[in-house]
Image (tube, rainbow, N blue to C red; front, side, top):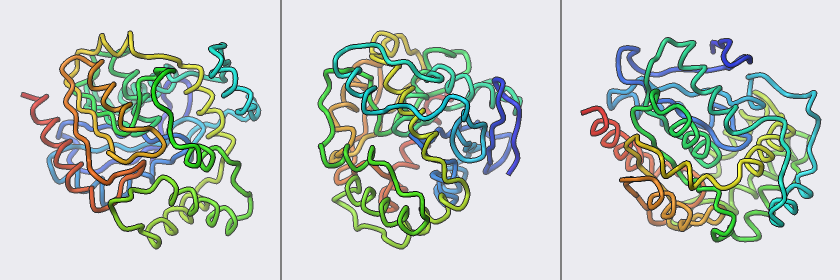
Length: 295
């Protein structure tokens, strides 16, 4: 896969579809690499007439790492955030949004449809209000507004996600299979083979949990985005699982209320993941949304 210099760092990326088609930039979630956006899903989107771009966020995959920043104390940061105290981070969601736009610059793309999932949805939101002239449309999937008073995820799901993973490969895979089961979509069968293959590939490509911790700090430091979200002018679609145990569906509903004119798609039975059984529905919704925005 190629990489480029963008916003002062190196960004690894990959593309699908016709370069002359409207661009769709996919932004992955906390700690996830570009391979989170699986090839078959990207091809499904490209088949609708989009030039699909996936990339490694900073501190993930093969993009630039911030080792010099050290490993933060996440528990202390969570406690500070809960008490309304400021949280310091090595970089911000603004920086990550600027990375995304820097990648578009490096690829010579003036405007793109922006789609992010979970933390990636937060970054996509920041791109939309920070760089409005670069955004054709926004799709925010299973994300939130940063509202500190919003309903919280289930304690067991939150605990599973923040628990430090083991270093050894097989132990890491076993640990994360348990995490996946905690956040999986209850309305869809658990895809054990797919999950195991994904975790094996992720570990072998780049096992880097300290980057995930620093990305978490950027989320905590970002705070409440609602005042800025209300300024978004790009056509927006919010997609959320009705049964998300990590970021409850109320967060998606709130995002759709706060962003002017936003559409809302709630998928019954979906949790905090992208089950293959929902791919066609999600891809079709994104395709319709981007086509309407391009009119």
